[in-house]
Length: 182
Length: 182
Length: 182
Image 1 (cartoon, helix red, strand yellow):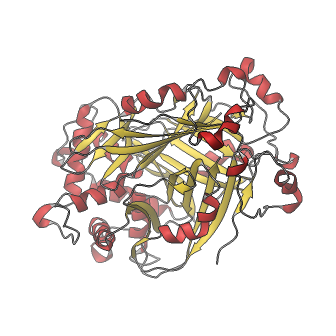
Image 2: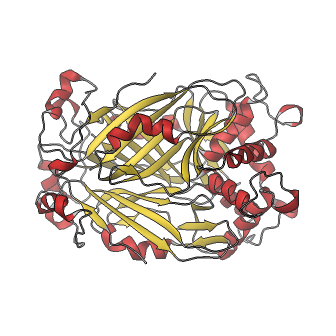
Image 3: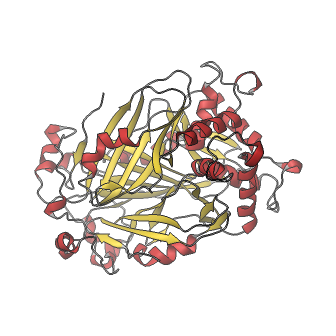
């Protein structure tokens, strides 16, 4: 019923080396590391700006993969970390097929978190949808860690990455993706 | 009140080297890395298939440790990542002692997420328990990251790993465990 | 709209080496690794004991940074993992400015999870606030992973780390922080 544990040591065989163009964070100090031919465990980090989207749950797997897919291919085993830098939206993993699942999830969130006159919130100066947005953000969270297996995200067949926008006024959202592996 | 930060560099002393049998993902290309005697940071990844369990919350710490415990012992410091490849079940960390905590958590989830005739869901073609299962999956999440300290999972005394099955019909569930450390 | 992916290899240039005092977990076996001049990917781990706080949500970013800030400065790119070793409190990321957001979040949790005579819980022997605390712990979770960018936590402008205490009787809470990066 189970596969064997697959181990990876700290040295990457040439076939697995990252082919992406290196863009050192600080060319003056990073040059030394780039010249290294041995290729141990690799780290990569990128900030992605997602375009404004309407309130609700949105499948963003393809948007994320468009940004990191080529880089992912350089990792045989690792982890991809996706971090949303906001407190009124959230990231979650859920169904990637029927958009009704996204709509129903938005319905659930709106049912469970009161908004408007019936709501007991003190924090109202940024609008009636703001405090409910903060609560929903903590319910689903702002961070995902996903396994990398043989150059791809190791999600299940029906899993996708969702950005859930909890504010009425759409704004661009920043996501920091960090890849680590071998 | 605080302990000092403990640092680990990239070279593992012989006493800490992994004793597990290496099973390269691709024997043709991975052989080079396995021959490496230097042993820097290590990565290990394994897909575990958990047997079908009835709807509700189940303590699975011992099942997970049975699969990875021997491998864990090779890590002095690191992180264990556990990822459920499904959208109608969830992973969480909660009490490992009184089964009533599991039963009460299931009661809570069923109270908060409407099911059946009273439910407003559009996504109903896979049964009345399917859309509630998706929502519960995002509430608790499908991924855990747990510290590894001196060869063991660094959970608290009362913490355990739970698999929460949200569907009525039990099915086997796949979990990808990724270990990374030194 | 997007920045380029920044890659880091396994060798750290001298300017980025950790300046923190090394405290080997096991001086007898770790001495070898500390003598290593090459400085590949680094791991650091520390258990922090947070003082007892009253029931509710508390911003703890400065408390965490006081403990790990100096160590963080040694990482150019990486991940910080924060793990709460308890099942009746939680960690989440939310607004770092208006304390009303914390108060409203506590109001929400108390509204959604019944407590006292109206509650259907079986697990009551540790007090009426205990089972609700377990449920809230799974709703928000006990673990956070945050990107490290150029020696600092890569959170957004308005994000902070919250410890949510769900028990009436305040107790000290242990948090394991693990840093990994380059």
